[in-house]
Length: 308
Image (cartoon, rainbow, N blue to C red; front, top):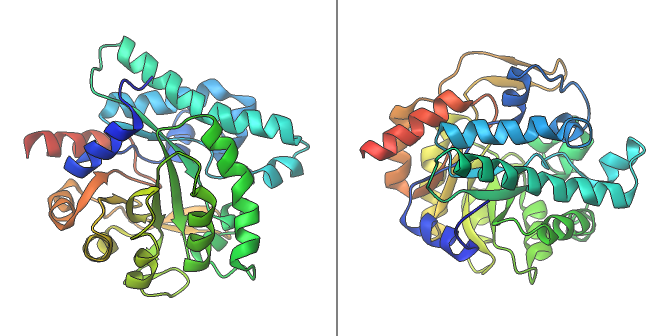
């Protein structure tokens, strides 16, 4: 488990860089697990939780200091569709945090001495729909509706005492407003991370406006970008830091393109360690990878910052 308090995580981000993990789904698939399911990696919380722990451990051993839990697609509504009741769903959400903690404990037992932290993933409403709408936003729901959707899951994850809540892959400002409301007063810090296209959110709002929402929210210890093309990272990091003054989190996809209809990736990776120092210079303090970024790349990121 983590050897440092949550406050120390905020201190580490302010100094940075801190290395984040890579994609949970690609690591599970590499281990032979079938994720062709609406629950995606969250299904393994119920069926193969040890696989989730092993995936976290692989990233800690690769050089990551922060592991994002397998709760991105874990929601009460999604579990209910599979016949899993509210109480069991809450247990599985808690288990997602416990799995990251267990992996950290094993890593420390194997001789890793650096602090290791657990970030509880809170994916967008579109992740529950499992139809690719997290890359569009604009679900037809208002801020209050989205807050009602997110609050129970966020409260369940917060009760498991993660070091931070990862409000990630947020496609539009309405959902960001709902998430910011939902984390207030919980006593657990959070980061807010958008998925972007160019200089706008996936729903088309200017990033300046999107990041400004978090500038005065005390619970938000970092803002940034994830699940986006590597070439969009540096300008978005620059904007996030300029608008908020907060440490920036940056974890792009590999650069390949996801087709939600065929559920396949196309194209070639464009994410390289050569991009990292520019992101750090622009304000990024928590840097890792998202979809299709595995332990080998995380090791390269860790090595790059050890040498800088």
